[in-house]
Image (cartoon, rainbow over the protein chains, first blue to last red):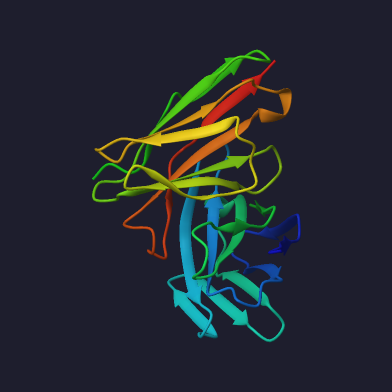
Length: 111
Length: 113
């Protein structure tokens, strides 16, 4: 079945870049997503990438996809304290309507 | 433009009781999906509703049921509550079942004692 793995925790200093990593097992994954969840809140869609793309950039966010290794990363440039949250990687293929999520990476930004 | 709304925000029930959670999708969206997020975990797909019918279901028992109304809003019902049903229940809406993006509401936090 589908599986999505993420590291649990990342700590960075304000102003540095953050890189959050994710691996997935489903080779038919067509879409890959990054969601952000702040304490006590729902999920905010940050960005997504099609599996036929290698990279997508959106302001401070850069998504890299290595389809051969089934590895997805999210780079946040100039990380701010407001970026402190849990970041979820998710995948979906065209045959399914559901998103499959990882367990989330808690990003802590030190001032 | 209102996003996805859910009610109530918090709920406390006891084992064996039944609960109903409500969701209104984003304006213009006709598809609603429900997810369960246990503490420290990522969301798990429960089911999706489109055209007032359940279209796909995750690995959840029949105690979990739902409904979609003609105005596209949706309810999630859970019968015979167990302690393990304590979680954040998230509703997500999308423009249609095939749309790439799903937008999530703030969730309902359910505590079962």
